[in-house]
Image 1 (cartoon, one colour):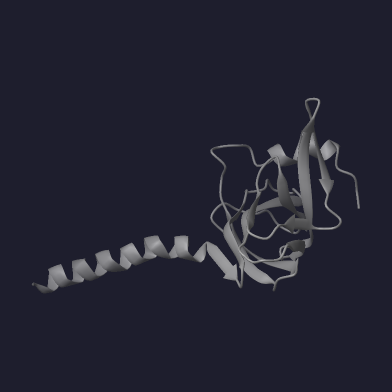
Image 2: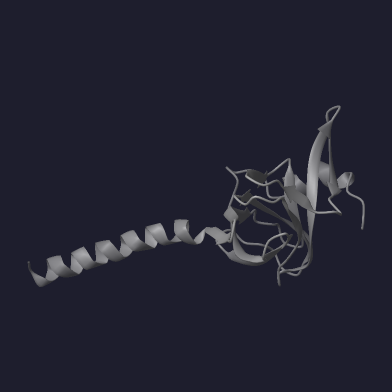
Amino acid sequence: MTLARTLAASLLMACSALNIAPAIAHDHAGGSVTIDHPWSRPTPPGSPMGVGYLTISNSGDSDITLTSAETPRAAQVSIHQSTMNNGVMSMRPLKNGLLIPAGNTVELKPHGYHLMLEKLEEPLKEGERIPLTLRFDGAKSIKVELQVESLDGASPTEHSDTKMQKHGHH
């Protein structure tokens, strides 16, 4: 094999490893708890709020509760639930946390459970990773990174438009 072919093969293998690494780094586990695909949306300049989505799986024999989260990018992170009632979307904080029953998976996603990143000092930009620590009752804390991704071209302000009209201060 020539030197050029050896270098080309090495470069191809290195690029392949780079393509696999983000998928591996995007899943996190701690004991019986697995966190899959933590992500967020970009925020417009000046927006004080962002969102966090992820999937929490509890393979243990006991229920656990997501009680809080924190990131250096926001003054506060709260757990919320959006619901549709008579055609009106509303959002409320879950003051007692989010239950993840034993042997079950709970998805935090648009128009459902989600994390609110409150009082952002600067916008979340597509492609960046936001460090986030998830705290549980019944399980150890888990550190993840929210990958800031677009949502099929959806407006990053969608979350803060009509839904925020129903959001009370806490």
